[in-house]
Image (cartoon, rainbow, N blue to C red; front, side, top):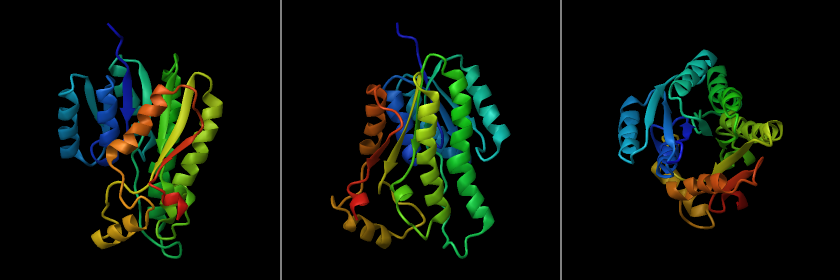
Length: 240
């Protein structure tokens, strides 16, 4: 019987984080399901994962507090299952032009979207003695000048740079890559009409399905000769 492996997915209560967690569970990984405020959604997602006959532990911490990241990994260690995959998916997307965005919104994006993946990767690397994979969830916005989301765009650009740095530093046993989705799930920072207009601009004229994004994760797991890369899954958004 194969020895189980653990996958940690941050922000996995809902949206893309949930899709990544379910995809890994279907591949047979035990899941460390991180969440913060979305308690009800986390409970529902954990039930879905357990229904796939894999282990799931739910961990509620605030990743903007470094000490809570230490607690997160104490819970990971308590599973006694080797950590093999980390997906840094948790993120926040403050809205505000550069001239007006407040320090709190600037720091919240940098702390959660960039500093937390760095600290999590440090901790994960200490535990991946026999190799592993770290995947940072970026955004096509990392390569765009989105003046409405300055802290978010900067944090994701930094995350792609961090991906390359960690890939070089942690090789050869640990691979580090990123996935940069385009339009997938509408958020509360755009109206329904704005979302429709964004989708219409895409060369493929539709948003991605969550499965089309998680298939990039499956590809990175199966192809062990890829590191330091950002896989763009954007329906052509980068072309406009």
